[in-house]
Image (cartoon, rainbow, N blue to C red; front, side, top):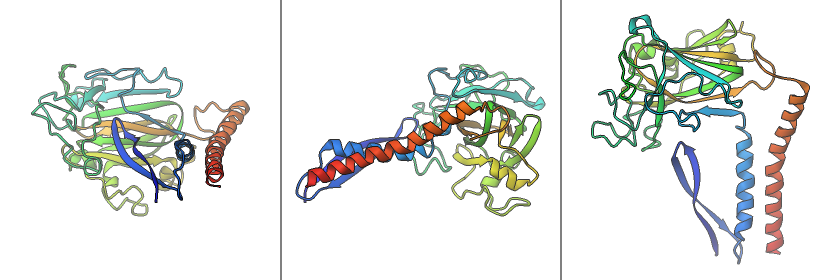
Length: 330
């Protein structure tokens, strides 16, 4: 039996971390031309991408704005029409009350503290791989690179460290348009106050839509709601642990409080009860309606045309590939 083998198809999973897989295509007596293979792969791949076309991720490694260790983060993403996000930090009164959020590079030892360092750091003081969390074991060597922190008082931008005062303060993310899904990576949340008192609060304008506690992702019970709404058995908070928290949706907030009536939110406030860092902020804009949404008949028509083309394109490409295969076979 003859085989056509396409080795090391590079599937980018996460910021420079690649999963390599091999695809074996078997034909009867003759090899399928590489062109047909590519048509099928492109068709199926496009179909999968269409399902998450609305998802947007900010990982602080983008260029522009080309953020570096110690860079202050505020309005660098606000001018991008595809993002429209303003990010700000506010340290607690106990931590000095300064309005600031900066970049920490997890591949560089800094602040005489290795808690936020991970794979890619060549300094002997670094921890190497993440010590745990759901991003550690499945993906050894996973580099997070730049992350967002509240800096410790008196931090030198060239030698940053995260604020360890309890509470540390808040990170606020404000969108120009309505958002109905929000997830992120959280690093170095240690058991105790940092987990039990850490949370995300959502606002639609001045309206408080609700709060989601960090501990709910690690516990299988949530007060007043059915167990398991946010629970993820893979989440494991601790020193130098990196965890991806599942996306929080407007439907989740409605489950927590059935009086919530909103298409989504335009602001999320992350309350840090202590040290920690955040990365890979992922969100989706509301489909229709909601505070701040710029919706008119023309944009809806355009969105409809784009959605239709996104679904038709993979079907057409796959159909051509399959048709050519049978023509070749016959």
